[in-house]
Image 1: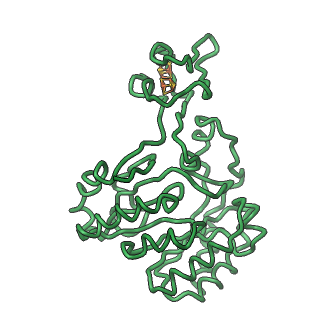
Image 2: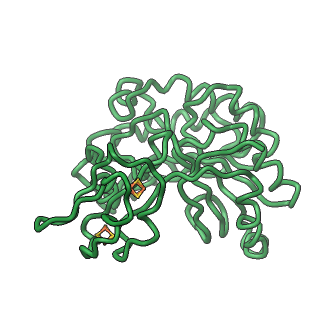
Length: 290
Ligand code: SF4
Ligand code: SF4
């Protein structure tokens, strides 16, 4: 049976499609969005995160790690990432809940029981299961297998994608996907490259393709002041040309993920300016008008 690398299963999610849902987060993303709020989903490999602000200096990790990756001295706790072999030995014994392993290899059978356990909630709320990430379609064979099992159980399925994948990856999941949650970060290619490191050509072509097949699509526009905030009208104009868009959501940029960047030893690229409520309302109006 195929395995996928995931970093979280979140139950009772209410922002990942209609109703109450369970969301499966997959590791690995081909884009490098400067505002990413799931930086633990960017790498295609497992990672140990060390939330040093939670450390209570108990020293349990120092004794547990055979590789000497943890150091505790008068200045505090230090984690030497290069020495870690991801054995997970230090995670469960950490008394401060400061260590977290992002990345677990699972089969469909491993996770299906948990996804089915909230079936009653899905039915009463019009919810279901969402595959997200990272970019879940980078592991499309697994997604196909999982979505097919969920459809056998009559569960509503959603795929949350950046669209930056080969057409064949989309084709694999199309028959088993009820709704695509699809990001448009920018229509202007230069703006897109500045914000994500990649062209948006494939993304827009794939979106038109999914739309042409009559699949339901919810468009999501992550609104980031000074980066892609000038794209609202262009996005609205583009969306107007599609026939199967059921909703357009403006997602206000936030910087809650800052501690994750530190914990993962990543450069924090989060922009400093947050959008005001008024800016978001105005942008929503632009979308509604169209
Ligand atoms: S996961 Fe294993 S190798 Fe890595 S720091 Fe913890 S105990 Fe050491
Ligand atoms: S086990 Fe956790 S709380 Fe204890 S020293 Fe290590 S990181 Fe800090």
